[in-house]
Length: 280
Length: 341
Image 1 (tube, chains in turn purple, cyan):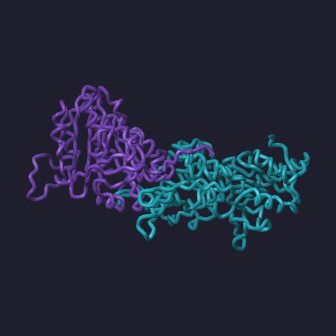
Image 2 (spheres, rainbow over the protein chains, first blue to last red; image 1 turned 45 degrees about the vertical axis):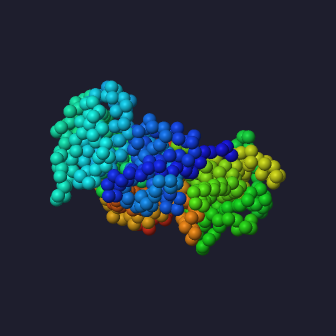
Image 3 (cartoon, chains in turn blue, orange; image 1 turned 135 degrees about the vertical axis):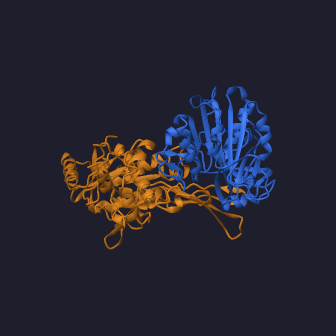
């Protein structure tokens, strides 16, 4: 038999930095143990699998600067067995990596157009590499609107980077939360993310929308965007499915005929809307 | 090697073939009667255990051998990984045309986005001695997909029961070597004619038909058909349709730790879109919470999405999902009611 590359074997990585984002979210910075692997390349919107041998494997968005070759980052919420295990790990600890997988955001297509980035909760993680990309190649794109919603101000991630983002020319960052708990000061919008849509500067016929968040949020946001006459072809969503293998074999991530791990996780509404099966 | 050329194996000499395979291969599998009237492919220890000529077995033999229900991907100790590929030579005797065609579909699924090394390690060491069907039951519908009752390719040897003897056709260099070792005499024209007569005879008895003309388009247009709700109320979500399907390829992956809490295995097991947990995501979200959504996924995958994914329907008409369904859900009947005929 000819040698077949084994796609199931994780490569060793070590944690080089841990940053606490919220009470249950941390951003981990990783480096490969093998120096050669560190010329690591991915596209904004790609994802990877993290393994802790014995605890299992789970999929995460790549959230760092895609042009940074020496490390990469995943932002992780503590929700299950794998994430709880990783959550307790420290700088120097070893994990396994597989990837990068997926298609990524349509950044080439968006050149010369206005950009609208819409994020709900942890959905900001896969969009962060887009923001890095914009800051490095600012002249490629028109105006940039970033609309970010979270449950409460304390659930917002990357908050210490907001100032940097706003300093990028012609980038507007709009924030909203569902609830402001007593005693917390908040000078931005309150309401679901769609309440920010009236502030979108981008013209529907010459812009690309990139969106990630809870599926129910993306459903309402997509419906509103279509009513505002953003064309289906230019509204992109990143979908969460249960990517077990990352290489189309395990079947879990299928949406109709699409394998989210390969054909996605980024899809235009023209490709997949309405979703046959919606997360509820 | 021309497939038209045939050889003759007298039925009383059939055990010689099994004995030869037992010598050539590390393991031989064939249909055994495991309960009164119930046949399944099992490991053969003595040639006389093999029971050819029965209709489809309960489980799909080739999937079970090439992609076992439980499979270790690698062992680990601390952070060190050890991979072991199963490269045993396995002969499998008496596989029907629908199952060989089912294996061809599994090959596609396991070559998608890179070949699966575990699957192909077993697959490339398989000796397939297939058997054309000279009997069918009410749930066989292979003629709808042209996947039986006669096999055209994908075998090393192909046998057809033509009375007191088998016509043996050769489909590979390995098959040719076996025939040479058995020193089988050449078949005569009348033996080939007898094969055709018997194949045509069984074809005539296969009355279950799934009309595949426009089937994909019909299925595409029926995602919101009321039948899914009705089936969702009937379906028990037991997943037996996936277990017995020769083309269902989904699996779940997980880790198992040993008592030392340091070493263990990462493994995969068969999984089914019929199960609630299959479509669970973080925080308890689920994109196929309703049983109706799950049965719709199963049937559309076979008769609709497979065509986009792999260029062919994901069904070979073996009828297993129909025979085994405790709620009497019949994929052919579903397609017919949706708008086919």
